[in-house]
Each structure stands twice: as structure tokens, then as C-alpha cells.
Image 1 (cartoon, rainbow, N blue to C red):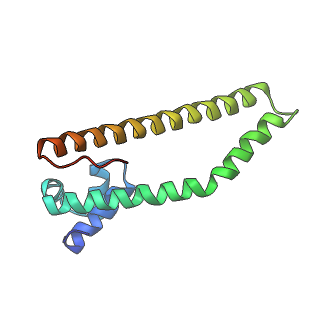
Image 2: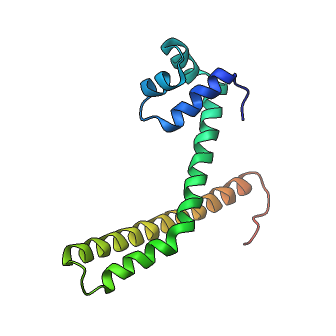
Length: 134
């Protein structure tokens, strides 16, 4: 993590769990002026980005851990003859919308990888380097 003070770390931790900067300022018990100055500071911004990235990785790991259980619960609702039709429709909607979003993310990643490969090819050609085959 970037070098920041213990007070800045307290504010950073508050930012991660607060809905607004003002709420984080109150939680961390720091001055508003200092908080906004830190928000512009390069080292603090780097530490905040790193902490947010770690929080997202942690959340993703947890979601991956419960995905089978979540899918089983959706399937149970769909297979339950006692379940209301509105519950079944909601389960179907959730499943299909997430499948479509996942497919879109995979497609975007594939397209981005192809663009990056092509950019590298062009750079290599411009610098007279041979293009490596995949």
C-alpha cells in the first residue's frame, strides 16, 4: 500500500464502508478540509484504489464461493410445485439476465484481447520486429 499516515488509513477504511465521503469523514473523525485534500493526494488515491481493488477481489471470491448454492436455490424455486408463479418468473429472470451479462463480459474480454493483440502486431511492424504467432 502507498505510504499514508495512520489517520489517512482510518479515513480510507471509513471510505470503504461509507456511502458518501461526508459519512466517511464523520466515521473517521477527521476534518473535512483534510479529507478533501487527501482525496486529491496521489499517494492517498493510490492507496484508496488498491484498497478498493482488494475489496472487490474479496467480494468476487465470496460470490464465487456461493455460486453453486445460489444456482441450486434458483433451481429449487423453479422445481417447487408449491412456489408462486411470480417467484418462478423472478428466478427465471435472474438466471437469464445473469447468463446474458456473463456472456457479454466474456465477449467483451475476447474482443479486447484481440484488439490488444492487433495493436501489438502494429507496434511490432512499425519497429521492424517480427510478429510472433500465437
